[in-house]
Length: 117
Length: 118
Image 1 (cartoon, rainbow over the protein chains, first blue to last red):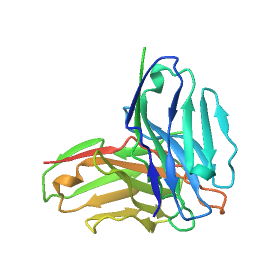
Image 2 (cartoon, rainbow over the protein chains, first blue to last red):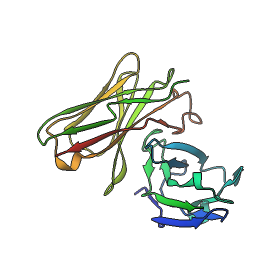
Image 3 (cartoon, rainbow over the protein chains, first blue to last red):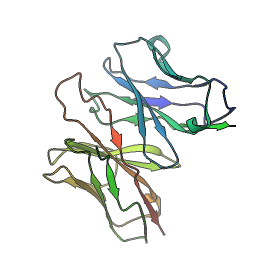
Image 4 (cartoon, chains in turn red, cyan):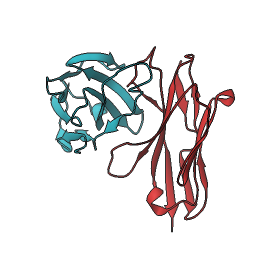
């Protein structure tokens, strides 16, 4: 069955530290999408990145980078030089467009990141 | 461009009552999905509506229902409320599906409706 595991419940770092959020997924589909969302205290989920199963190229966007490895079923997220504004809950998610539906996201439990000044 | 708007933001109900939550998607978005977020179960998919039709449904009892109007606005209803229905209910909209490589779950979420059942 499809599943997303975020083993880190909470991470606490000091500003300017680098931090990596882990995500491991399970799926039997060959076509799937992986996502990261950020949930600040206001509640809305903010889309960060989408990656399809055929594109294992890593991506960097400013201080954010993502490492997708199909061999280990992982899609990890690294924040470089963390800032207080990065404090939020981060969710990894999976969708299986042909079996589950495009907009049916399976979310991990989330990792709460606290960045202290 | 206005984001996804959910109303009400907060509400308190008692067991046995029913509740209706509203969601206005981003203009031009025809798909609306609903998610429930609780501390115990996390984020769970409720259902998705597209062009006034339910396109997908999660594993929730029949007390949870929804609908979508011709202007893409959506409502969800929970009848016979239980304590366990206390949650943040999130609505998300997305652009229309045009092909296998598009509409890949890039959802735009509202701030949610926080329901407390006493």
